[in-house]
Length: 154
Image (cartoon, rainbow, N blue to C red):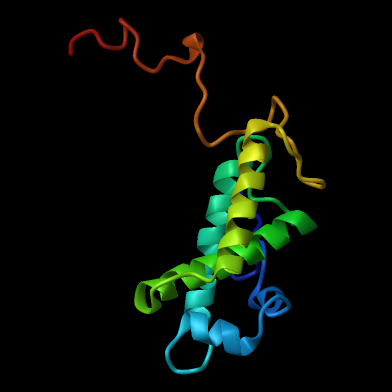
């Protein structure tokens, strides 16, 4: 089973620009993503993709990722981490990240570390079954491609 995709083939994100705008204003998002005063949607999409990748890197130790449907907690984590990612990009030019944005990020990562260690759960997320296909690869001793017989003559 592959990742959930939209009709156009793009992988679905855990949050959207609209979700982010429920937490910060359009002016704040514009300030974090561009110098023109207009929100740069490409930068927003990149920050969301980075946030979602970070979430999957932790949650994937305990759950099937990407998650679909997206649990509310994961959507909120994606919003907070996306805002941090945008602020971090901007901080290179402005000097520092706002303490409240840093706090949201630190809290999100602390929770994700607990998820990865099995100390916290994500309600609505699917645990992998023993039959779930993993992308990391699995092989048993009987699945050997190269055997002494197949390598004769090399």
